Image (cartoon, rainbow, N blue to C red; front, side, top):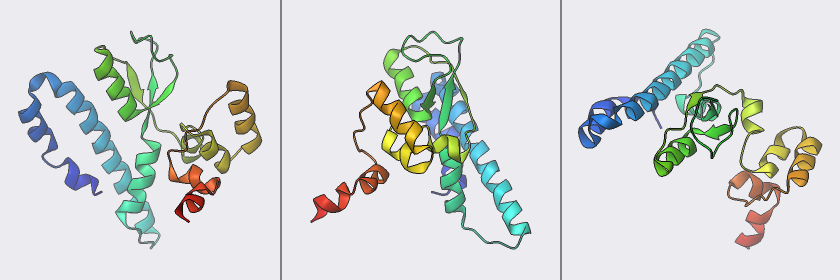
Length: 164
């Protein structure tokens, strides 16, 4: 996933296909993609100044993880999400299209720790840090983990059980 190659010419192609009314969505997505590219370049510059060579794809994975969440703002019209709630960027955009109303959100930069503790899977959260707190909170809320990701399947050793 080379971000720079993905973004080149993207704005013009999409605008030609979808038309001008979708321009605001294109602009938001393009801004996030360009900020990710800038962040990757700054991190690479720092590591190269220290004499460390890291392929861009590794840094892009981390950058995508910390920039994949948005914060629902209080001035939104949506009754679906609470103000101050963290959502995945794609989920917020999909919900906005389905509801036919704008969900007001701001892009937010979460650190690696906060990003790992803010997932759909409480098993994935518990495997990272603050295990007792995460499991107690999940039990009190009656959360269900649907085991959709690889990490929670590896934690529970379900993956290898079904393979055999």
